[in-house]
Length: 176
Image (cartoon, rainbow, N blue to C red; front, side, top):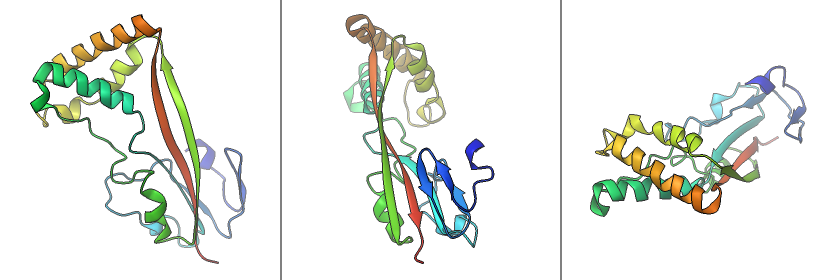
């Protein structure tokens, strides 16, 4: 990561003062495929671990759009939800999981809204679902086409499509 270079004893990350006893390990994203967060992924002398993740309801509007499109194409009884990379380490559970390994866990929430006035950015994101959609039995191209039509309708009606975001940075420190 660009801002991790040279960040060692003390420093600033997005306006947060860090004064660790040892080296800082920055993780822009936790390995979402691991079952547990392992504090040993930082260096042995590390005293601070920084992680980021999203809440379960993060970007719910994308879930709702995909669900509606898939239901229209496949029928409600065949709907398969989109895969969530944050599901194994969601913001809803992360502080408790990390407190098992760290004495102090500070959560800096980063709420926001993505506003799009044309469908292409959303459709490009939904297109990235192809990797799992085929194995989940989703008729991918028709579902993506239907999502585009639905999205265009919302943008024509409202002038934009808004996606709510809820992520956070977690700063964890070991016992002194």
